[in-house]
Amino acid sequence: MKQLSEKIAAVAPSATLSISDKAKKMQREGIDVISLSIGEPDFDTPRHIKDACIDALNRGETHYSPSNGIPELLTAISEKISSENHFPCRPDQVIVTCGAKDAIYEAMEAVLNPGDETILITPAWVSYEPCVQIAGGKVVKHAINEKTFQLDDSLLERVNTKTKMIVVNSPSNPSGAVFDTNSMKLVADICQDYDIYAISDEIYEKLVYAKEHISLAAIGDMAERTITINGFSKSYAMTGWRLGYAVAPVEIIRQMSKVQQHSVSQAVTFAMWGAVAALKGDQRCVVEMRTEFDRRRKYILSELNRMGYETAPAEGAFYAFVNVGGDDVQTATRWLEQGHVAVMPGSAFYAPGWIRLSYATSMEKLKNAMDRIQKLGRN
Ligand code: PMP
Ligand code: GLU
Image (cartoon, rainbow, N blue to C red; front, side, top):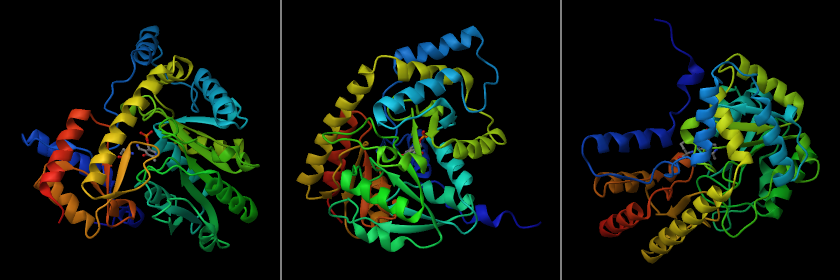
């Protein structure tokens, strides 16, 4: 038999999905595993969002829609971006995708040529590098200062004539850090000085505690070269709906649109009506979920610190990033096999020695998990 694609063979499977699948398998086998591995809100999708989707189904919104998304959602997104994220956005600068992940993938395909370099600030989420690889590009990693979790001038050392793009993710998965104005301005200056595109993944923008979220596209003329990624999974507890979006200059949206037309065609029509309700409806649900995440965040950080672990800033998203020192994969395996607590080893995010715990789960489970980790003791 002829060899399968070398390009795909070189891509690593998703570590987040693999560990969560392993935890689910253990649960099915009757083992009482507490999973702090995957970043998925434990809340149900708010009622009014589900109702809008059910209404759409009952109205017969069960056919193809325009490939970039239903006009009502494109308008709702453009209004949200212009008013909340402080940069101008027209509906033709928006594409609705099958999750934010799909938007990231389409963006990479739209911008990168073979051999083009993309700067990835590490620790970084697991899917950026594979998306760059599938698009034929090359990742250049820049390790963040693990004390401040902010950027400094050393970022410039990664730039050369092949640099085409930089990926910024604030609030960050996995560290929970939120970039301040200086870090964002530094990225903007470098992009403008060296003609570099940016992907700004802002999927956790609604989950910021005691700090301000800054959109990269709102700085200077960055809207001309930034693809802003966002979605509904985290803010509105809609992970299974597979709905995300990108906002970018029209030339980039046109490129992404071709990838979408020839692959998934569009996001699910009736699901998009739920997203319209999410954006235009009462935002109290977002505040309630954020308040609860914040309560859990304070609890888990204080427990981990009490056990003597150093933690990253945890200013946003729903992850505690913990410095366990030594072999993180071994520690994560021990926590899972002996303590029945599933977590993500930092190595999956290019941060050996660290472990990511998702606190998007109930307080009761978190308390139980902390007890188990405490009992296991340090290696
Ligand atoms: N970006 C980041 C940083 C994430 O953590 C996730 C997690 N799912 C995504 C994008 C993709 O989200 P989704 O495809 O569910 O919209
Ligand atoms: N983004 C979440 C995580 O990091 C969900 C899983 C995934 O899409 O990778 O756990």
